[in-house]
Length: 128
Image 1 (spheres, rainbow, N blue to C red):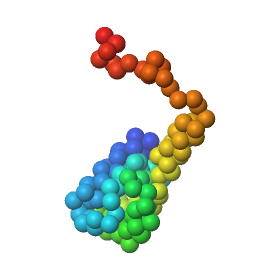
Image 2 (cartoon, rainbow, N blue to C red; image 1 turned 90 degrees about the horizontal axis):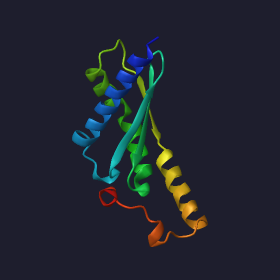
Image 3 (cartoon, one colour; image 1 turned 180 degrees about the vertical axis):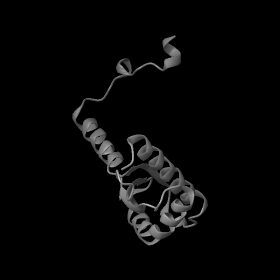
Image 4 (cartoon, helix red, strand yellow; image 1 turned 60 degrees about the vertical axis):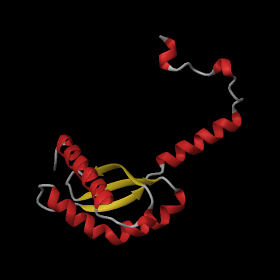
């Protein structure tokens, strides 16, 4: 069992490596702009959940398909980068957090009255 500190270190390295691979190795323009939003890894370091989001929601299914077919590639490259006995199995999960936040903001805009100019917050530069 790995310590919490060790888990966090490995998760951070996995997140960095997968992000790097998306930018430099995956040359598929159909997937759009993908962001790795976080990685959590099990205590025994055997399973890593990689959360991701995409700028254009219409690209979600294409990106999911790409991750399904490229999982072994990502795992192999992560194994080369991190120094542990065996590479963790990678599970790619769509991060619902950003979509949920956007939905909450949309509902609040519908429910709350619009702000007037007097209620708008000042820019930090104007407050000084």
